[in-house]
Length: 222
Image (tube, rainbow, N blue to C red; front, side, top):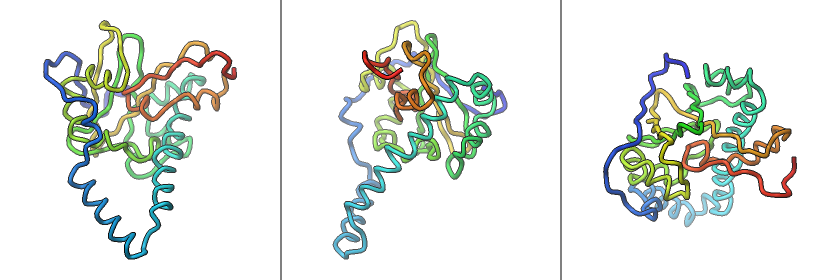
């Protein structure tokens, strides 16, 4: 990672109690206002809820995360691109055509067996839209934003992610000046896979750092 970027990270080890996983689903004041506005516009016939849901789903789970998954897959198979990504993520990502607002200043951080990275925005919900799409509700929630820093292992456990005690966890605070993309570890058993096949394994959550990329199941294409 380039030393010129104004990054901010915190190591695991904070002692603090934590809320339960279901707190991730709580709606903030802004979410409630948006829902109220949506209801009014729907009643007046200005929007079609079904069409709006389809549009949101497209950006939240299809277009955005697929872009990031392609970046990760390219880094897994192309060492030159990997090195470029780690040195200048903004330029490397832009070379694949993924640019725009919320993606002007990118930093890539890579998971290894010794160190795991996780991203949060403690102040609001800064998020790399060009590569991950719309931020999930839990990413914007107050419980995640506070607990990710105070109790990262507890947060990972809520997502079903358990790491060895020897694995260090570093939490990166995304800001308006810099946003992060986690490059998850490539799972074993994917030798010889194409970029497209590899990209299909990469989830949005794994690029935030809350989940791992799972090894392919028996019978998966190679």
